[in-house]
Length: 107
Image 1: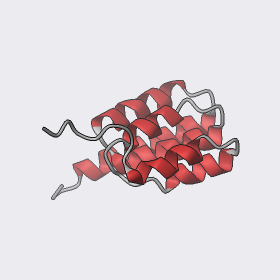
Image 2: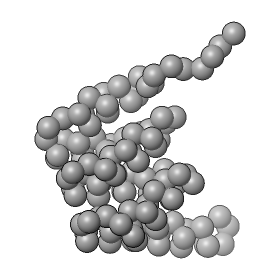
Image 3: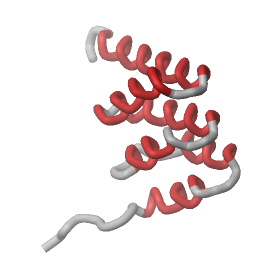
Image 4: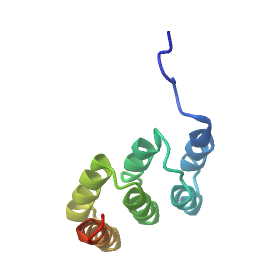
C-alpha cells in the first residue's frame, strides 16, 4: 500500500538547502526559481517569516505564481502585516494582478 511521499520531493531538496543559507540573496534567488510542485507552497509560505525583507518579497512573488488558496491567504496577511513597506506593496500588487487575471473574460 502506497502511503504517499514522506519528506520533500527531489525538486525541493536543493531548495531547502538554499533556504537555509546565511545569505539572504541566495534565499531570495532560490524562492524566485522554485518550481510549482507539491510541497513548494509550504516552503514559500514559511519564507514569509524570514528576517530579510528581500526574502519575504521574493516569497510573495513566488506565491503569486502559485496562486493557490493558501498562497492568496498568506499574501493577504502579508499585505496587511509585514513590517516592510516594500513587501506589503509587493503583496498588494500581486493580489491585484491575480484579481485582474481572474476577472478577464475566458478565464
